Amino acid sequence: MKGTYSNREHNVDNCKCAVLECGRHGAAAIYNPLYLDFASRCGFMPSACNPNRPNEKGIVENAVRYIKHNFMTGRKFGSLDEANCALRIWLDEIANVRKHSATGRAPAELLHEERGALKPLPAVPPDCAVTRHCRADSLCRVCFDSNSYSVPARCASQALTVRAWSDRLAVCQNGSQVALHVRSYGHKLDIVDPDHQQELRKVRKKAARQNLVRDFIGIGADAEKFMAELNLRELNADLHMRKILTLAEKYGREAVAAVLGDMLQFQVFRAEYVENRLLTAGRIRPAGGRLHVPRAGDMLNIELARPDLSIYQQKKGEF
Image (cartoon, rainbow, N blue to C red):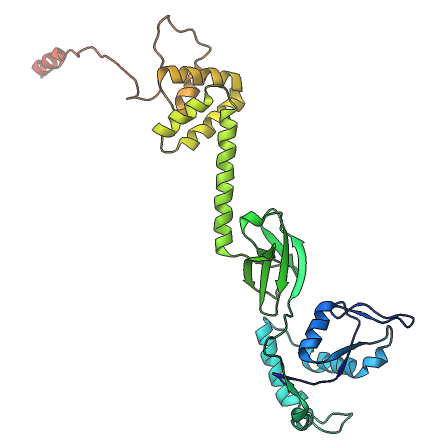
């Protein structure tokens, strides 16, 4: 029953969660320290079965077989809560009210008689979390039981510790919790915390900006000055920088670096000016000719002759 336990020696199989090294040739078994702590808190002593001796725990094996063939056969559950609910109904209506083949009585009757011999569970429940050490991947995910769980961007490629309970999963780094998720019992699912996703986007955006600035400054000596002026004058300076980097791939960094120097001299700062300058670089311009800017209203001083409107007066007299 929930909230009670029996005070006796318990036989335990040689599973790693309980026994680190089984006893062979008369040697004593080496128990998992965490399991010993659990046993001491609950007031019982573990006794490991001998290797390859299934008869020593035949009652347990029979109970497992009974659950598999009576409860589990033909059933599928979408969650642990759904399985626990179905199990509770099965226990109350079938398993615990049937006549047991060994005792000849219903388990529910025997439990009622034995209740007085049971003692309360410890006030502070022992920690029964499954602990595994792992490393987050470059996408800020840790894997546990075939599912992946998100962690903060700062934990990418870092050594972490996963602690899993029946209902939740915590990820820790250097003893501090960095992520907490509801544990999933699905298969190959990606469980993501929206805050982790947003943080990852910010980190990637910052890294992309740093790479853009590094590549742009690498064009030439005047690139950093040009970038500073571009940031002052344009709302989307990054767009112009990316376009200029594309021009550097097409025309070469030396050619673009030379044009950036001209742009600083003429005080014009747009990717379109750089592209036009590169397109017309091979043409011969008159001495003292002005820089042609392909956008109206920017450093242009165009004078047009006054139109002769008398032609319209002559046409008017003809009609």
